[in-house]
Image (tube, rainbow, N blue to C red):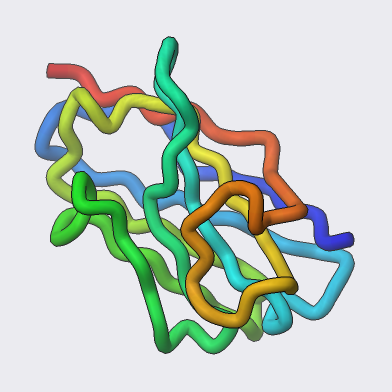
Length: 125
């Protein structure tokens, strides 16, 4: 099982930027499709972005398209989420997830079998 640790969350003003990192260990990182999910208080967990094993294919939720960019560095066993033009509605706990069961970007939480502990992102207005 791969282990995932997120970092990079914090408090930022609306319009600002943050870059989240998800460091993986335990298994060959390039075998895993990676995803970023978020959950705001009182709301269901939702997919934010996903990236294929090679990094060629990506998926973005409509709410973040054009503002967020997901990438990965297989040599460093790390996935990233660059978040620009942040809005207060982006406030949530962001978690990264991994799956070796899906080749392309996976958008359903049920497809993932490894999760990080989450990192808080708070965007003030």
